Image (cartoon, rainbow, N blue to C red; front, side, top):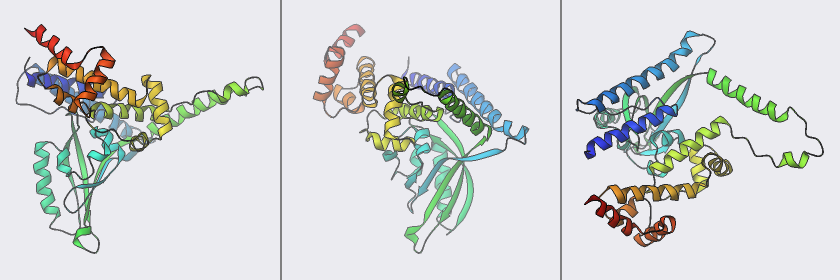
Length: 327
């Protein structure tokens, strides 16, 4: 199987995982191919768009369920067009760490056609002190999925030219029914936990009961898991900073991660690094040094020690065995 075909299959698999998670704003980038994979890509894009539109237009059918407009992604650009401020949801959608967005030009996260459209628009924006306009842009997540969005762009400046800023807002439409359902779930959980007053004999046991994760907490922790998987090569931030990016706190992140995935954040990170490195050793021609760097290990020695401790053999032993099987 060619590398290009494997790459396209990986994108399709990622798209399916996102749709299964309830994210219908991603799209697969079209190719010039005319084959079954392209037909699948087109079908998935159409399906995601239909579902997203259905969820949106439900709000217009019943006037008692008004549309809510939520800022999904928000960027503040400096005078050079580089990102100064970004909201945490944008980091989650693009599956990148906060530190890897700040200071980067906005077009670093756009697909090729959108880059050209943005450059043209940016040149127009620089000619005026104040400007309000909308522009359709296609963002690219780190996993390669396309995120088509209508962006609302506003420019403003202070006393001097260097204080000029540009605000890019991506608005997601939803209905208040989501909030009502969430509130109902919270009240049901609260009622279930307080329905029976604790007796003196059970008071101490109830104090030791585990905390309950809300549906929002679970969603944030799952977003964090995706970010970890897509940034194995990066230096991982502190748990406090990572929790802040996800919109939660360190305690809920550690507790919730253990509840959902049965391990700690750092152990999960290490397991994913080792899993990916093992696959790369077996199925790619990359050097062991490159694989170590691409999976977040500081040195080949550290990589080799950790790998042997986990699997019982060294990376070089696995590479030799894999080459022998290919002969």
